[in-house]
Image (tube, rainbow, N blue to C red; front, top):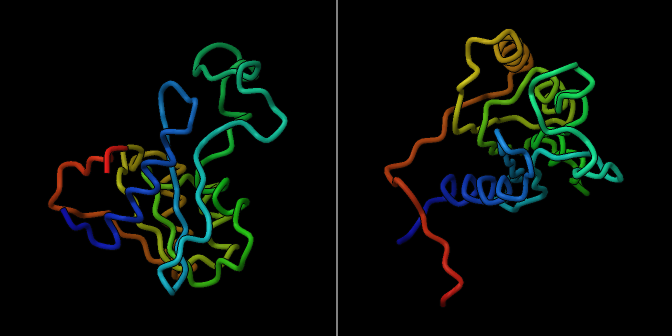
Length: 156
């Protein structure tokens, strides 16, 4: 099976998401430059030095006992992992980025967001994201493919 560039880069984002220890939402991101070279990847996880066995992954209880104050989102992780300029790059992400990640996307110079899922489209965070992306002239488009899956095997 041959895959196109978008399928390849979204596949890298999805494979990166498999590294996340978040039990409810695993997100991955892959940033690609104008030469179709991967310049960074990321997934949602705890900041360096913060033991993911100690910090919370839950979504209930006191706010300090929930994951939201601690987890670094996949898009921001990818931006922070980059060792080169992200000007005019494309970010592939498995989930439409939140408003905080969109600020970082815009500030980093990324010019296009390709997302797979927009399950939080009706939330204020994603609505704000789309308002900012449009204002900053950052294109966003939903990933499209005619494939239901791509299988990776260690057998070659």
